[in-house]
Length: 82
Image (cartoon, rainbow, N blue to C red; front, side, top):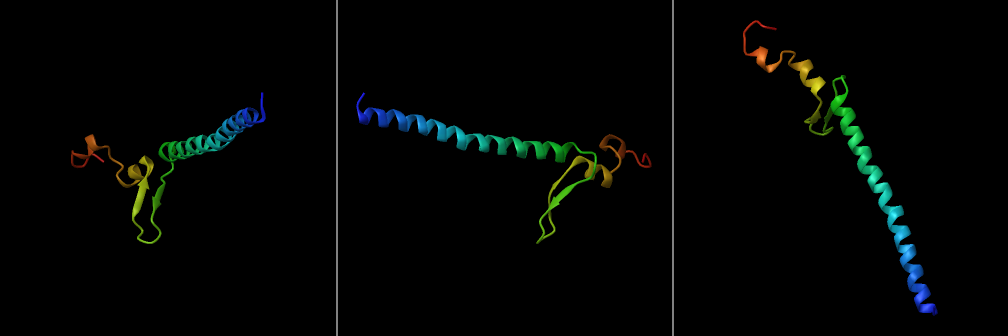
């Protein structure tokens, strides 16, 4: 094998190694954000995310909605049910 072919093979190997080293943290970052979303949505503590300039809510979990409206929608249509 001549020097040019060896350099080409070596660059391919290093390219694959570099690709997998760079792409693995991105996959971990994607899984991490999904874990935080699952935690935010599933936790029984009321939580919300808001914009600190406008104080507008950006996200609210189900526990926070239940804290504000304790009646289920099916029950709340009957006056005096809750």
